[in-house]
Image (tube, rainbow, N blue to C red; front, side, top):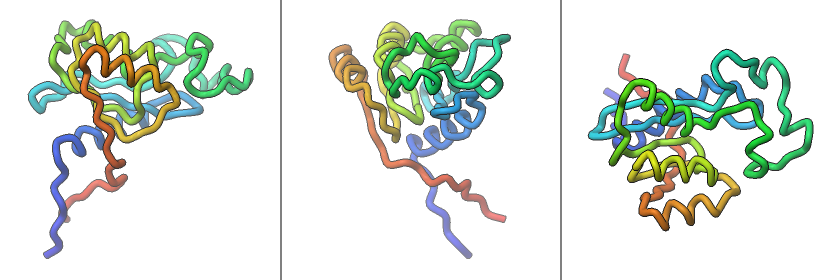
Length: 160
């Protein structure tokens, strides 16, 4: 009988964030986020155009066309970030995010870091890289724990 390693809670929720990222309509980065409290999923979000708008898969990427590097000029983009969509979903459905952990495939930009502060998120767990160091500094200043892990396996382990 083959034994499989049971993932830690952090690995488990990061793997779910990886799956959520598959819904992304961004041509540059597929980002997924899962907000969790007490080992229960509150909301999820991925990066993509606002509901009802054409997305980058259909129209092309404005940031690529203008050669804008990752982490700069966030306003020149059709997409709403994964963290923002997860927070918006919580608001739409009356779910408090106070004291929760967010699991995200990429570290936050400065705009998302500010939103996470006001959403009263207490912990940010990721495995990815992002060029915006000011966001990590802001998280530290406001007391949101930032945890960088190794990327979980891209494999779903099941017994047949």
